[in-house]
Image 1 (cartoon, rainbow, N blue to C red):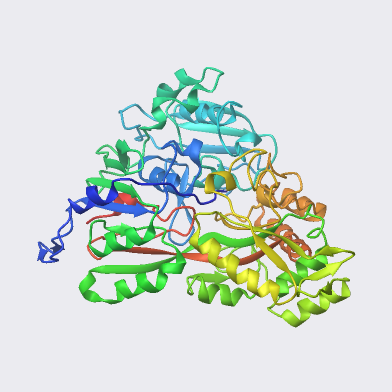
Image 2: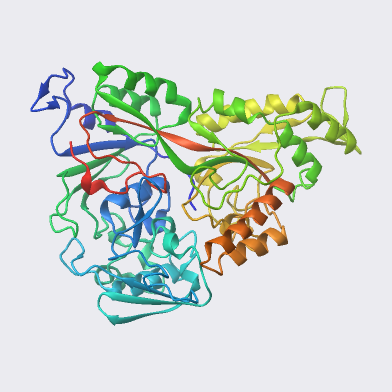
Length: 552
C-alpha cells in the first residue's frame, strides 16, 4: 500500500515554456504546440529517489511504469496482463501448484536490461534478497517475506517456494503493488555491503531497468527525462522521449496544461475538477479532461487507543454525523465513487454491501451520544464525567483537500456536540515510518488521508491486529481478532469463493466497529492534449500500464 506526498519543483516554468508554442495551428495533423514523439507530463508530487523500491510513493511508481518491468501489469479493466513473464501464473496453466505453495514465473526470453544484459532468474533471486535485506529502506516486505527459496532450473524460469499459501502473490511478488520490479544484480550486488550501501547507491538517481523507456537525466525537483529503449521486448515504443515534471502548485500545473507547456496533467485533485472539465469542454483548448477510476480511497481514521475514541458508540455516532455526499459534492466535486467499504464497490470482487451502514443522520448521532452519557455543555460541546468530547483532527499541512475536509467535519461534528481541533503536520512527518511518524507512531486522535489500494482485495497490512504501527500499517490500532483471522485465512487459499467469504466477514466487522469511516474512491482527474493517442488508463496503482503504445 502507498500514500500520497509532494515536494517542490524550482524551475519548471522556465523549462517548460521554452518548449511550447501557443498559436495552436495544426501541422501534419498535430497542433503546433506539440513536440512530435515527446510526451511531457506533470504531477503535483515529487520523489526522493528514482528507485521505486526505496520510495514507494504513487509518483515513483508512475515513473517506474515507464522504466521498469514487473511480473504483471493491470489493464484498463483491472485485469492482470503478463509483463516480464510470458503468461500470468494460474492454477489452470500449472504455474501455480494446486496446494498454492509453489509459483512458477516464466520469464520472457527476449527481455534485457537497458544496457543489453539479459534479465534472468538470478535477477529475480537477487531482487528478493534485496527487499529482504534488513538494511534496505523498504516500507514493507509483504509477500516477499512469505518466500522460503527461489530455484532457477534454467535462466528463464523462477520457481518460487512459499512458506505458506499467499493468495495476493500476483500483485505483490514482483507486481506493481509491491513496489518491486526486477532489479539488475550485475549493477546492484556490489552495494549490498551489510551496511545499507544499497540505500545510497548512485543507481538510485538513475536506475536502469528493463522497461520501455530508459531514464537518462534527473534534475531533482524539476524533470526526469526518459528515452525509448529500442530493444524493448515488446518492440520499440512509439514515443521517442518522455519527460516527467514535478510542480507542487496545482494552479501552476493548470496554467501549464492550458498553455500546452505540458501535454498531460496527471493525478489532479478532485477539488479542481470543475475547472478541468471546463478546459476539456471547450474545443479550442485542444484538451481532454478525463476522470480515471482508481483504488485510491479517502477515509477518516480513529486512533482507537485514545480514551474517548476507544468508545465504539462515539465512533458510530461520528459516522452518522458525517455527510459523505456533501463531501463528495462540495470537496471532490463529484469526482469520486461513494463507498462504505475499503473494497471498491465497482471494481473489487471482494466487495459486499451486506454490512451495517451509517447514512447521514445527525439526530440519530445525538441520540446515541445522549444514551452513551455525553451531555451537552454550556458551550455546545458534550461532557461526560468531566471530560469534554474533544479531540485533535489531523491531515497533511500541504493538503488543500484535506484542510477543506477538516473544515466540513468540524462543522458537521460540532452540530452534534463534538469539538474537533485542527492539528496538522508536514507530509514527510505525517507519513514518516517508525515511532516518530504521526500516523505510524500513533501521534494523532483522528486523521484524514488516502490509501492507494490494489486489484486484489487483500487488506491485511492495513487492518490486521498483527500489523499495528509503527512496524505495520494498522495505524488505527484496531484489534478485532475475528477480522484479523478472516484476513489471514483469505491469504491461505487461491480459491476465490473461500476468500470472498473471508472478506465479507472482514468488512462486516469493520463496519460494526467503525475504526475508520470510508468516504469514497477517487476518480482522479487527468487532463491531456488531444494529440496524445493510446492513453488507456488503468485504475490499479498507476494509470500508465502500457506507455509503449502512446504516441503524440
